[in-house]
Amino acid sequence: MKVLVTGHKGFIGQNLCKAIREEGWELTTFDIIDNPTMRPKDLDFTDVDCVMHLGAISSTTETDVRKIMDQNLSWSIELYEECRNQDIHMQFSSSASVYGNNKSERILSENDICYPSSYYALSKYMFEQYALKRPQSRSVLQIFRYFNVYGPHEEHKGSQASPYTQFAKQAKEKGVIKVQPATVKVLFEHLVKYTFLLLALETFSAAYQKFSE
Ligand SMILES: NC(=O)c1ccc[n+]([C@@H]2O[C@H](COP(=O)([O-])OP(=O)(O)OC[C@H]3O[C@@H](n4cnc5c(N)ncnc54)[C@H](O)[C@@H]3O)[C@@H](O)[C@H]2O)c1
Image: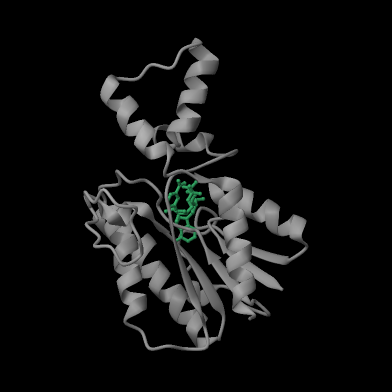
């Protein structure tokens, strides 16, 4: 089994690659940080069974629309088309942020209405919509809408790191966690929606097995 992971130098990518190596799968990687002008058509897909596409601008506050639409949307579309042409399965890292301001009290499902409220969320949602409109092919696409993931290697994300990591840092450095009352409520709501990293890795793996069923 050979997997191509994009965005492997990021937070989830580092953890995922470690898990893939431990699993004994063959692994090849690409991160745009190493080659900003490279496009999906230039990647080496030799013997690749599945692309796990994590590569994206992950900041929900990015305001450079042109950049985020190129790096997150166009890049993903080009990659998906390569996968389709070469019968390679793909896993796409979407985000719970696509639900945006959906105020539903219920637990949200894939069928719920999305109100993406950032360019980041929009870039993820637009890829989903693009992919849904493509005819079926031998290449299977799986889309994951991660909520907040936390775990090792997210220190580089600064204010975009998970609240869990930010509060752990505050506690370690200052001995206290400082939050506004409103933040506590939001935090509590978010905690119940957390995606534990371990769970995310198991999900990748379980979903991957489904390709071969
Ligand atoms: N961390 C979370 O809580 C969370 C939540 C929802 C969705 N996601 C999604 O999961 C994926 C990984 O997130 P992360 O937290 O590891 O982010 P990260 O910012 O730590 O890592 C992203 C990596 O992708 C690389 N990259 C950017 N654009 C690329 C492209 N077009 N092709 C290849 N590489 C590219 C970056 O250089 C970086 O190394 C992203 O797609 C993100 O949108 C993450």
